[in-house]
Image (cartoon, rainbow, N blue to C red; front, top):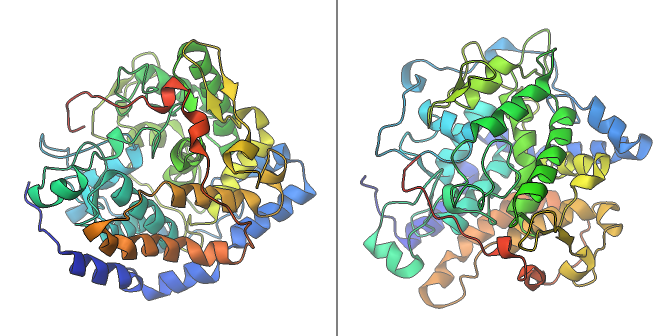
Length: 445
């Protein structure tokens, strides 16, 4: 699979030109609404009990979507966006939403995307906001991708590149990003240890448990999935001696966020339900599942956008402020899901660590939830997960880390965040799941 090589100078120039990658009106709207969901979420949490907020949250988040506009919400799945199953050389991975985007050409069909392609494609398909998409894509490029070429893989390893591999190694992709981007207690994937090193293939039994959450009314909500997340965590603790939930952006934020993404991004929107609904039909289609309960079949790599599906409103993109507020509501409404630590080599041996020890005394389990501390902590985890490109030629990659800061800066700038030092991640070294690495299977999807 040939890819055009990019010089460091070109990468830097492109990074600094970020605002031109997306529609200027979309960017202006996103920046003007920065902190709106966060502020509203804190207001509601101060007026109600967190469990009540969770139970009342719409499928469009803490701020419901406005009235339905069919033209705005329409998503094409014909023509250039017609469904095509991946070929053997294409890459698919652990995220069904990304796989569906690639199968419909909203992301490159080979599964390898640039930051620009990610921002444009996920915005068009799911109305994922440009600031959040940029932050997540930059993180993927730096953690699991090829920073010199500015690309990342939605699944397995990138093709070997003699020029860049000598400097950075070969980017391993999301399928091999466990404890960096992905983590245990997934909605449908195995824990890494229980999967024998494979945390990107769907576990049909696990999906069926999630499917049953819809109940007789055949509807899935944020609150139902938060309860289910807690159940999955407890199952992992009881069955996985290497279960780990550590102080990194992936395990602590992205894992619960993945449950929230299913509701916020896969819900179908209509005039009757402008904030959206997710039923079993849509849930199965996005996860590549056919059949009925008790006889589900996973079509590997063949996740697809359902027929007659409409995305969330452009007036209510899912953006940078939504991840921490949804995670905060979940952790406050269901405090048993706030797990920092892991099993110690046997099942049911979960041992927690103190936020005070992780943050060098800046935050503890109580102050974490005061004011804006949780949002500050969330994106500090993301920043501290970036590799330290500190020597030689790699100093020239600083603009791409600056790009990450440009995405999250407008949000964090208004929060008066406490000063964090380097997090003490050494406190996790004695957990065997902290260092357990993905090993396979040797497949693109």
